[in-house]
Image 1 (cartoon, helix red, strand yellow):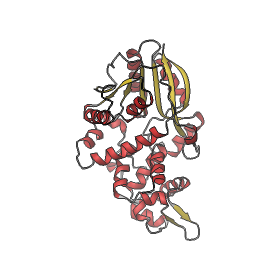
Image 2 (cartoon, rainbow, N blue to C red):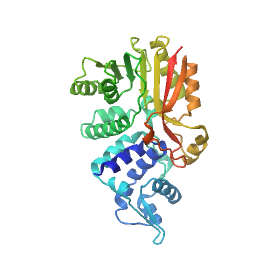
Image 3 (cartoon, rainbow, N blue to C red):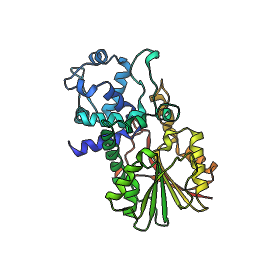
Image 4 (cartoon, one colour):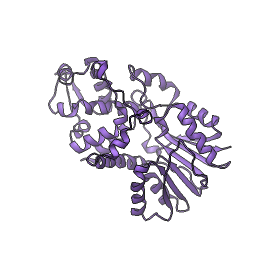
Length: 341
């Protein structure tokens, strides 16, 4: 597969609106249906999707190069990017990666059979993560997809300023890809990855494969509980967006308790800018926001309430990868650097 196309697909999956729409396009099997051009009414009939909503989604996706429309024939067809999603393994991988976005955004199914499944359901009874981890068939697909997305993000990451730090703890660090990268970039630091018990063996394997067992360790823990106190920097990436404000305050407060005054807390996530908030909620009308896309101001206020002072805010990605299209992607990757006071 063309690496540039694969890179584009994973990059766009990070955007909240695109995450929803890419999942929906896959769920409706649009890439396969559009191997041959079809009219909007044909697609609506084949997918049982609301025609107006289907039109809205296809137009937005087409702006970023997914699907194309022929004015003369009034038919939709695949673009190179959407055609790539007909690859079975990539399609399965993306559907698993985008599972938290599982809402019936387009479908006009009866309310009785709609399932509003989101990341929040992990904490209120439905644990899709454990289901994936215990399924030997889909786990390798899920891991391949997660690692591809992680490594794409890491390859574009700017220097996050760990020069003064000695011991770094990453919360909810997955298989430890970011910590491995940071250990290689900063030879003076040691670190740990705190994760659920299902992932610990994978972290340890990753550490061993990179010969970093003397510098990185895996910790089985819950960031809603007490955190280890012997670290001078705590990092969290792409996780707090999955929690409501009360949970986020709990997590940030736990980080503050674990750090001495002067300790660093670095929060990497997708944040909205203030004037995009209305557009974001308008575009995802008829349903709740799946991830809590906070503005930078809201996030700074949470940090201040929990005992941190914000030192600097910058894009997480290097300048050459910063490309914010406010009409389609009203949120972007930022890192908020803060210090415990």
